[in-house]
Image 1 (tube, rainbow, N blue to C red):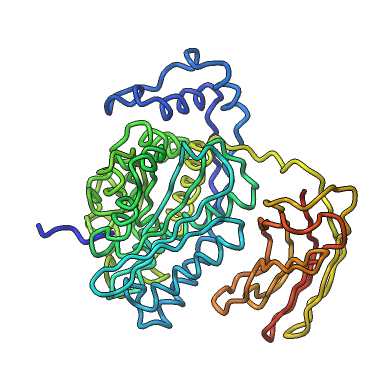
Image 2 (image 1 turned 60 degrees about the vertical axis):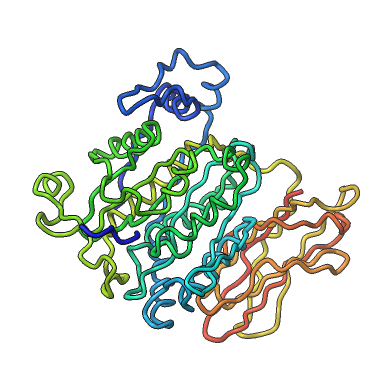
Length: 459
């Protein structure tokens, strides 16, 4: 979060009734339903049968594994440690951070765009990731700033929001979500200099493209060590979306005032786009009433390491990070009205295990496609399940029957998670569908082992 101007245990989620979901969906769709802070969602009876059917069949949001979110934070900490202790704009640590996020999204089937801008004599980077499908005239967007201050690694501010948004985006891929609205995610640079990256992005959009963004959700600091549970108050329907979610967990929220104009929602809001979001607190002091409500320590800042060198991976409250990350997913699933109907088409799969030699030659697993006509799809789905103790060692390619090779995943020394369980989207429209397709996997480094568990093609 930009500096202010001078002055794990799993929790059970309560699911809204169909009528409540319908009413909420109507409020989020209709600007007339958000006339002011006291505006109530319309009664379910007033909603059309078609809308009710859509809401009733919408998929429930997944639980976001906090261990996965923390694994991203561990990577960002390692990047900062290896690059002078920070991940700030214009520094090598920031570029390494955005490369890490981009690599994860590319492997998960997103269309990623790395956008550059200039500030203070240095090149800055924004990363925008679009999930295939959905109505592109109605975009649901979520984002977070990825840069830190120069004085520290910025793991809560704002590795936490960046990691929560990233893991939610990866959950979209794992679920094979088919949203009614188009999903877009953003990671912004140079926020700590006054929302420079997000301003640059919003200013680069035409008025027509801005009007297509139905809502922008911002997540800046969601794992503060002495946490609060704050919601953005600018749009009453989006505010209610998060308040109702946390109420289902028995957690009372407060509206945020500390972050006014200090994070990346501001450029979107100034452009007339409705904004919402979550915040766990920065350098404001937790009151006795807030400590009674949320736990923690009264008379102490929500984050005593705000903009300091001690904002490390130790500066995170796991419970807050877990709850906030789950809330991000809930909002994305609710606002996009997606479902998880499996992709239509014929599936060709190989479930035979193939061992992958440690730091050895490439191995392949084959599937034979028959009964198709013409060429393969421009959006061929390649589902991969590889068990491996260090996924960063692996290079993965799809080899078509005519020998054309499609790179699915590169190796990376910073990709330390286990296993590769992802669905990749490949434009294979230039190659024949029928024939023997191969998944080619090579381990290019020592000391870790694994095997191809299964893989499949969906036409």
